[in-house]
Image (cartoon, rainbow, N blue to C red; front, side, top):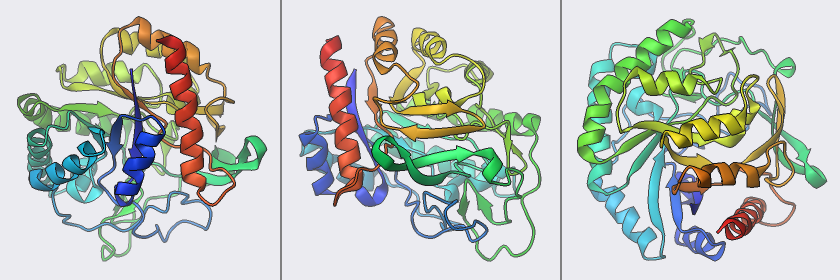
Length: 354
């Protein structure tokens, strides 16, 4: 198993490359989308905790040259670029919404996959979701009053409609005007993801890229009038069987799976790592389950992280694990301190195993 760090687009810097190596990471998982360009105006203060917001209706596709330049900068610090996390909503909002631009956008996604393959980046993570990551709040909920996300369905209106011009908790068209996104049923969502996978998986196979599906977070039955795709562990199997392919796999987020109201995290880890379908993973911990949970330090949650690693090791998993996100520590660099704690703990467990 390999130790990795996840970076948002604006954090892809020489300083953070050095930080990653100093903390013992050898691999990076990078978000190419800048989620912090604005905020969803429909949300009350304190709810849109990630600050995700305005993107553009026709975003610039990631070129192979751009990706190669970034990769070379990482390699110069002894880091391997393992995966890109998530497509920009600007690239595929009508694929998610089954809108009029769907066919053009699916061709854009295919081109992105080809470009990623040319750059030699093996994985693209994705989250096939209409509402996206929504409903979290932040507060002093982790050990010692450390600030971290938490979810409580009773504190929000889980049925609040999504404004027109928005998908995945980001505004792709601020001029869309009045109205809301129509409700999306479970059947409709699965039909849309089947279309997506049938179109892109052959391109991914030919390009040497594998697609890794992230589970829903929060893993609610439905959110903002739209169905959720993988909100229970067994639904991963449905997704894998929907369009069988060596390029169809999982970004296994331990925190998200643990939050689910049904199933067993350890059984899911054993099942999908046994099938060699976990392409990379998010190594984070939580307390509680739907409809109420909170994120905590990696060593204080409900998951026995050493047990989880032993399951992965027993099934021959040799991929990358990243902390994903972690509580912020009280200091001048709260994110870096929290990540340093998580990476140090992970490195210690991996040393114990190997």
